Image (cartoon, rainbow, N blue to C red; front, side, top):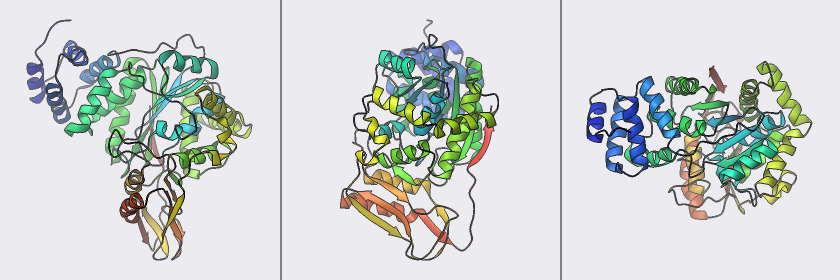
Length: 436
């Protein structure tokens, strides 16, 4: 590979110039090999944050990141391989019921998920509240579980897209996280390294999302769909609202309970609606249904027949967990103490701020304030009312399961700010649009 000057590359991008594919490949290779120091990569990331990437630059950067480590080969598995990714939200447990529902319909789901980030929850943290459930799987184990069960629920291996993992930690500490090209390339490099045939994206927008407005969320969705197309991978994106939490439960074990409700044919309407919408896209991409309507019917049938729950039980056992939790949710951890947040007046809920609720959950211990923090799987928040609901004075707005009094008091500072009660009912939008 031709040698380049990192200083020249930084200065050219700083001044708005374009970088050639071989330069971007060289940067990623040299940084991964520790021949470019963090301070110079940080300078380049800030230049990209300010100046952006052209479509050609973004394609080359993403391809270089996904090629920085191991790329899974799942071509020997006959079923079509489709994954799903959410850009992050509060109460967003959709992956947990969605993956077994789709796998029960004949599409293989090699799902690689993440941990909680900031005020948003992480699928891996939720799954690990199931006693014994392992999300850290080596390559052979990951592939073997997909082969046998058509479904695996794991985390990104150390050897996949290592450049992304290192670059993300830099972005987190250098003020360059909310950059459209850097977000898009981070997500897509990891997902495309899975060796999947297609990808369905849930791009969140609203106060509880990383993309606060619809315009930014739409731009991100279009960018990721375009990266997939240029890579030869089919991608569909759905924009969904994250102004209030999804579902009633925010935490870890309590979100598993709510996921089990969905798999049993119940669960909150908003969780069910998003799950069925994304699942329909996955079945259409996977070629097992021609239309989204037929796909939805097939997903509902997998729930009603018990096939979706059986698939979840299979993968829990395959990953070392206790499948008995699907029939006895009391086997999941639960903090011993309960506090209720009470409505001070009657009226309609006009605000149930997802970010404030998410931050309250983090302060309880359901998420991490520092990367090295442990997660308390048994604490959480159950929402008693959401936007559009009528409440009377004295009604429960939220119930908090907690372990530590000091953590409760810290959490209540955020939770009490989350709710606004007004005189007029409003009905929030949930599924905003589709791309791809």
